[in-house]
Picture (spheres, protein in one colour):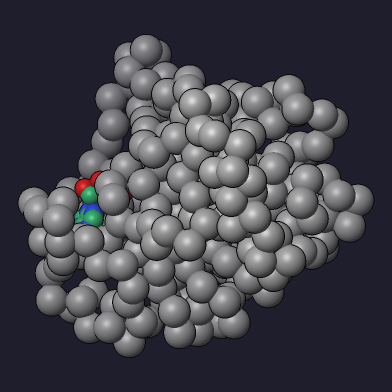
Length: 285
Ligand code: ADP
Ligand code: MG
């Protein structure tokens, strides 16, 4: 922005004013994952955006994934992924690795990047203070969990203290057994439990594409009903499925809007929240 003239700089700032007023005191859940997490510049701009949101009175909550980082440590430890009926199995050792990477490394890195700007972020695992209760998805798949309940009390308390919760998606059952849970699913469930204004997914594509091979086929706005129809017709596959399922649930459950945006764009969050530019895909009820 160094090369913009003063008038343009002022205009850019003023464009943000209605959004700052509208979202003051509102909760915005951001799921952080994919590319945006492994690139240093993008990790830094993500932390700046989160801090800026907090600084103008919004209440950001970060939920993060870490699939690639888990895969990387498994490879380093020489642990081969196991499959049953084509589906990946999370045995006790894999769960330990996932928990170490998510809670011990990825979470810490995000907290540190945010806290370079002030004492703001607090890392949590879904196991903390009963935040995420989980049940086994299918005993054959080991310790992969589904969300059976969210108790957002700890998050509400941190937000009331003007802190920024950063959540790893390990949940536990009533007996204290830990499960690895899909971060997209957790982000949606947390947004719903908090009555969030927005749920934003940072991913590694432009947004929801009508044709996965055509970046020009971005759908800038869809309703939950349209998504449910697309879910049945094969338009959506792979990692986009849990995101869109979570979006549908969240907007039906009272979350204002859900967004899927391109985490490869520096400051994409800032662009989504503070400007008129429509970015990525917006999901409404
Ligand atoms: P993340 O780390 O953000 O969870 P994922 O790989 O799990 O990333 O999910 C995003 C991926 O979903 C995209 O890179 C793309 O390959 C896939 N995908 C499947 N169907 C679609 C679609 N219709 N539009 C966009 N992406 C899609
Ligand atoms: Mg994914």
